[in-house]
Length: 276
Image 1 (tube, rainbow, N blue to C red):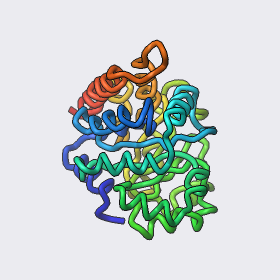
Image 2 (image 1 turned 90 degrees about the vertical axis):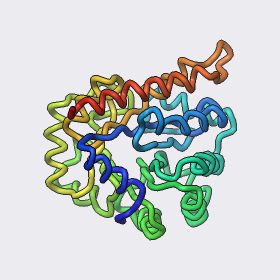
Image 3 (image 1 turned 60 degrees about the vertical axis):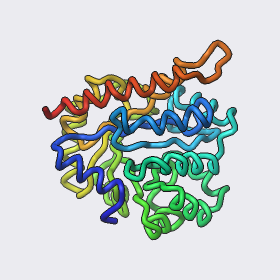
Image 4 (image 1 turned 120 degrees about the horizontal axis):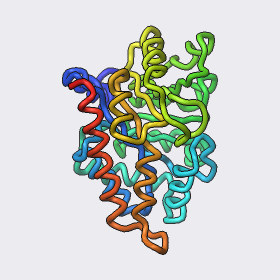
């Protein structure tokens, strides 16, 4: 799996001597056009990797802020096919920034695995994170995704024990996503000391970067994580920035875009200051 956009981006970060910022936004939130403007603006604002949420009706691992973002996107007409179109449109102007699709297996299953992988590769998707497809089901989508050149990104949590870890890291590539707190997204705040210990344990078992998410909302929190991990992942705060920019009728405005990109600048500055 060497040579993917994700591999190259983390290699570049190592050369720069810093951690990265992984920005999660929901595809189509608050609508297709504004979402595309947000995604196009993220790299220039300081995001190193874009994590694009695939809207789904039952996002069980996500907290209320991301759930509502998914609902906004679905109401605006977002589908998995349009999510891939959004990636395709982004790629017209950016050939380098990695894009990871994160979400749940049901929409992909309904799309058709082979058709999805073909269309995703053609659109410019670099990796997948599926929270409800365990390693025991690798033959379902993981191995076919690897065969077409995608990174398959695994999740590890504070409750992942030594017995379970070999299954978690099997076939993992790109980076390992460490969930810093138990529970849903947006709940609580990460403990940098505990995260640092966990990252050290993980690095002893894998040879890919470790990105840490959940509980990171501010530049200071992002800096704390960037001191011990290879990247900080932020999602809920970006979805809240979109919500804060809606008008009185709940429709998207330019403030949604500005809010996300201004927050990206702040978080990126925090991440970049961590090892200065």
